[in-house]
Length: 238
Image (cartoon, rainbow, N blue to C red):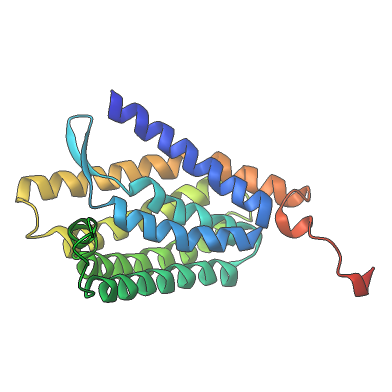
């Protein structure tokens, strides 16, 4: 129960942080979250835990929020702005991986205590990055396409339906690609299939639970409660 309680708390905290960053900085905040979340997710995914008696990895929640981010951008600002967030996340992940691989090549001083821990975390990062970026681009582009497909074919109604249908299908694509590249050969087959199953199930739960927050973000935008709506008018325009 301890892990389950923490997992639920972590999910709610992630959602509230997205609403908070959108409240303060508007769509710029969502772009920031897109880059931040992909880095955190690919570090957290290295930690395995038990949830409901099955082996799972962390990172599913924060990675799932990247779909929430693009769905908010798709709903309010359109396909172009959502794709911009995807490419920001892509660039951020590549940059982090390159910088950390160079950093690991430095010879540590005898007083250093972090090198081995950093190697444990970031030494596997090129493989995680390949898995993550392949899955990320495929699933996020599908999510944006599917969101607008359902938006067009439901006469712009039923936000909850397009949010869930697009995200859940996209996360199935993401899970299969990511787990296959990242974990085949790294874990025994029984553990691998548990991770594959739990990764999708928990992402599915995140997708279902994030729907009220898409409505919340849309409400904030319509009522001028986001960062871009509250920015002061430039002096020359006053």
